[in-house]
Image (cartoon, rainbow, N blue to C red):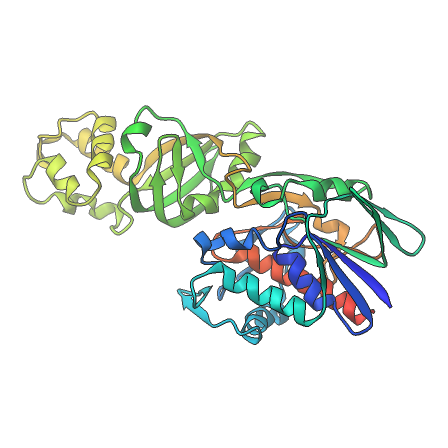
Length: 401
């Protein structure tokens, strides 16, 4: 009878435990919080976007992207939604995004915990793991009060994003004791800080845009969606999906610039068609954009708001159009891990077997979820990776039990 210990009772830890459990082993989850799945409850604004139909590998990012297809396989892409269906979850699918029909993240958490209970998996709450040591054929897990022995260990402690949920980076410390290499983590899916004297003026505006990230004047990535303009910079899902690149670039001394197209619904060469009548610029633009944003654009263009478009000279017309469809903001920083949904960086994928999630340095040690050097776009991808990596680890343990 083997003993499997999972360190961390989040998404990856819970599903690892479920897939690890057989009639021939004992599975125990050690969770530092008073309850499991705390971060699950915060996803999707409390609604839990737990999956996405579009599993294009480009939605996942790593220093070693070439290894991702060995983790994110066609088999697992089909298995994840089927697994949740079998748990009784009725999905509400909107544009490929999966939510529980209840629109409550507690539905996902409770379904997982119910399966944990059905499989007679033990959960020990309020247990902080300080050190893990590999002996000859077993592990010693040192907590504040005792030493627990295990035949195999899965570390699923999460990254250092959203530390209030318990993810404070302790998993990195546990892995470093085994001489594992940690690629420096940075906040990802996070708000950006920008330059601009107009920030307080446009704060609170939400509008649909197309945004382009340039690093040292080279186009890195483009996104479309709703942007949120704040008194410190910019936010919103489209910004989150660009944000992973910003800390990496800024910390290398690179120039990071976001170009915003406030008129994504119109072709560039047709912008002039918006100004066919002789209304004032302010009146015409406020028929399209939030008045606070209109004031910012007109002031930046430095033209008289009472004039009509046709009364502007060619240079003024071109400058106005430029600020409407190519509004440039220099990114000077980003919010902290306290505000980020996930983290870039983590354990290098070169130090695990991507077919099993087992460490290549320590036999019997598995690493899953956010602790790895993988981060996903908004839209259920980070939970998706937690499910898939946890399934892989659990399957390998149960198969070789």
